[in-house]
View 1 (cartoon, rainbow, N blue to C red):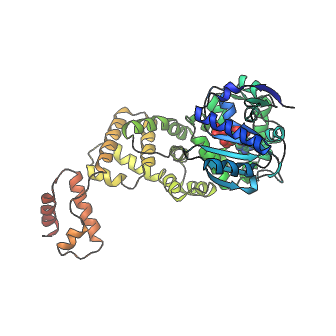
View 2: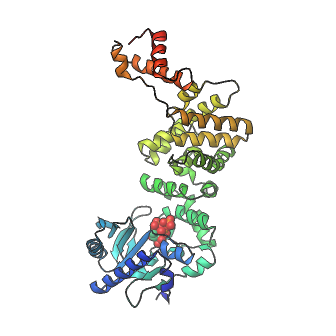
View 3: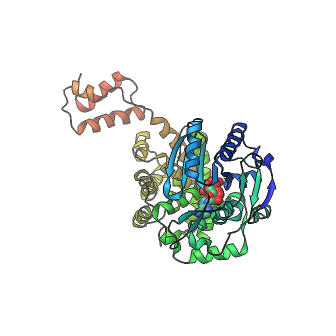
Length: 437
Ligand code: ATP
């Protein structure tokens, strides 16, 4: 039987509108004759003194029917995943909530998704990854704020320990290996001794290789999306887990330096260009594979089934960024337009990596030079020519590939400050290409 305490004040740390909503949902539970709980990360975070609004609810009864009732009452958007007996709601104010039927899970074979059967809340908590996540608080009136801690989650939170609930946990679901590292590094907790042994054991087998690409991608990118993933990346390396991305992906000293420099590069970029939205996890993945051969990178992209855009970034992270960096930090002058051409097809993520690579080299002078180049380049991206293809047509030039060349030259001249007005542009075209109009 679950260890219980009554902690309604804990739930009251959530914003008032959320507490109000949870109370109403608890009442709806009573109306429909089912027990409703908020479970997992929210309870853990409340006990740690943090407020997160990623609400996971578990219902002893028909979770999907309950989710439909909540969705009807609050006009919340609803997506139902019958196979997993879960539903996701999005409330009109943007609040998200997952509602699931309490269940037990069985794994037909390791590393595949489980089959689920309705079960009690205690059993539902038992199928969870770690004791600190196997906590629930009831929402029904009269029981509002009743804390269920069947597996000593509070003790482990106090001891700052990550502990699995049973010895087969990592075998059942190897994504828990990555989750363990994620929580360990996020909270500065440590893995309990047996849990570490089980994790190392599972990591040394081929279990992770059996995970599907999307599930592995999800875990890797979630880990890299943490506030400071550098130590987590080192932990993955220590446990030799990068071999599951590619057997030749190595965490060499050079790669480690680049990865370690990424937070600095990201911070500089965010300060300088606050409007640029960076896919941070991808920058870490680019840094991690930045010294690998194109063949290794391509295989890693396939293993993780990255999207086209992610793949383009990760591909550029190798030789493209390396070449650009070499040119930009070389002694001797480079024209602004040359820099523009060098960087034009690189994404902002690739530019952050470029900077991180230079930060990792600890060469102050060249780093300042590179930062100046980057600032100038981003500013130059705003520059447009006054004349367009239509003007070239009016000048009697037949449409064709030369349009791109000519307009490119015009843009270069603008970027280099040789011309500044439309009249300058016309004069430039006349002088260089004999075009008049
Ligand atoms: P985060 O703060 O990173 O969102 P979370 O604990 O809320 O962490 P979720 O991935 O949102 O994590 O999962 C919600 C809950 O579902 C977890 O707290 C845990 O109880 C359970 N859970 C999630 N993934 C697993 C898993 N792979 N195995 C067992 N239980 C899991």
